[in-house]
Length: 259
Length: 126
Figure: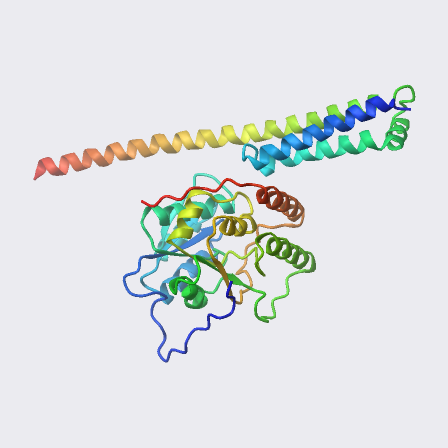
């Protein structure tokens, strides 16, 4: 893992596009009841890179999420009912895989991921240094201080996962990611349920894909509520730890097929 | 006091349950979400079987003085009831989703048929 060695060279003009011209790329935005944020997210992404197709996966929202996303110019995939973040994100990966995209980025529909940092995030993937790049809040000092309980949880997951994959991973709960075709194929074929990021990190190493972290800063959620509430976080911690330890004993590897 | 052989049998049975559940998760035939209650059941039964004094004390709370393992049995039944109730809610949700899927599929087929018909009409007009 290379970590912070991905500084973007200073560009005089505002860069248009995050990847070479003609490279087929897609932004996957899972959204559940985010009518207040999703339109802004879509517009910001399109401003950063006009060649980037934006796919919003509407995870059974009861509000105007799908309409707002479509008005802002996104392709909208509506799930008939709420699948949870894992199922929603995988829908996006399947879309990316079936439509032959070479590069995918993933941003949350609540606007906490800043599209302006996409160019930095995709750099290691474009350079061929990694199959997947994850935006980490903890690689560089950023002033981000999550609440105490969540900070403990994040630290424990990072420690456990780092030990299991024998690599330093600092942010296992980040949904700000860039993936090449190989990583898209893996996640299209197999992706964890419920709270997927921690287990997905393990999967990546198990399939001998390379993962690198890129320092990012995240914004405050633009309103709405996080999917992780107090009671759920207990379930989250137990379920993910169980999945991580049992998953470490799994030997079966999902075969990847290119089509 | 609980006969030793009953405690040993209880411990063994709980361990078998735990191992089977973990193996089912590992081989991906059981999702973690639905395994948690089973694991809790196994752990509680294991604890009560192994901790013989504790079982006596708990039996005392419920006025069971003659045969403490009866409490082990009762708690086992209670957990099975909880698991079954949980599954009833899961089945209800699946049934609801199944209805939505069937409706979506039917509407989609109808739209597709319409689209084909439109296409046929256009090409005939040419």
